[in-house]
Image (tube, rainbow, N blue to C red; front, top):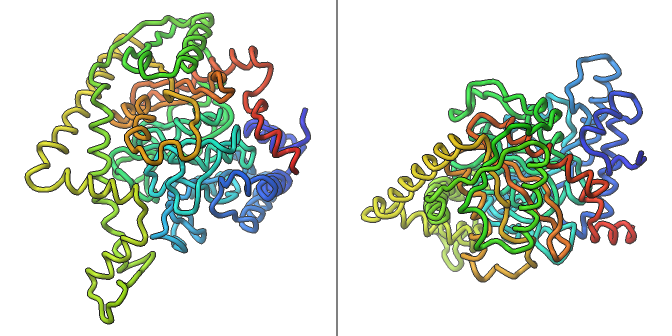
Length: 506
């Protein structure tokens, strides 16, 4: 058994805490020390709250020693994506326009983390306002993949995935608008879960696209994701889209890890052409492992998935252009005056501030969304995209009549090199082709490691379940994880070569 707390899963840390073998302060300090040593190379964090995390850890230890009822993850530290508001801590959404903003309130999920006694290590890097698939669009510089520091860690939540993958946090919070939890998990060899839309409160999330955004766990194991899901999930009266129902039995399903008799549907449109051969091979091998464990495999067709990418990139920019209108230099955040104007008007200050504060990708999507919503074009673009969204949801409904869950590769390739797709937005957008349909329909999705590609980089396996049936995806993910752990002889992350190099450098 390792003596390094940063190498343990969240569930293992929870067990050590319960047994009195480790304290929360010891665990939190170990992660802060590793952040000091390793994060300058990875850049997973935008802000580290050392004093706050240690104070929260000490309080967790006090509560435990006083015999107070302990939540399952009490004392286990966590990192939070910088799109989630945190009282007293900077929250920038990866944008210069919010540089220095300190929220006066916590997001609901942050409140729940604190109530559960989980120390918050800091805020993780992300694509600006969650717009991107590589975490290269952050105003504060890119995050690097812990498997290969010259490659992307996925996006928009690459900071959260890299923090977990580089052992800089045992758990992290991400947000998923079109795959921004699952795709980073795929390329970093971690686990990422997008709950059913409304299953985790969106109150306190800086909105990108309100009908698509969903917060969820980034972890190293499926059980860890289920445990964190249980902490942050549940109804919230502060969020009008929150589901008024108990959290599904996700932890029970993850512990059971049973797929006997389960019908698993392979989505024809999310395999084959467009997916790298090595990614497809790892996917096929994973399906075979699930078959060996008693699952029944069927093939399903979702024909409107072929239009999902185009529909998404009309719906998301339209909602983003509306949501980002609030950043006007009048109330909070950056304020810039136009050069050479002695007494600028409010409109001139607003224009200068938005020009200086927003990056190129944000500007691109605002312009596209404003155009799609404009008079004369609304029905032709945004209206048509919403019709496609309905058809995608109907495809899912028909597929779930034939199968209990659906599976596909999470991303069409392994991690590409930093800079490779910055000049080709369409190539960047296509990286989300397998994850976007779940957001359009509001269903839950999970990415688990499925092995390594020919380049030695991680490949992800995606599981999709019907809305509010999140436990099904955890059961399948845990079963696959158990089968692959037997093959690998240990966690996949232990084989990350860049991590070994960083360890030597320390």
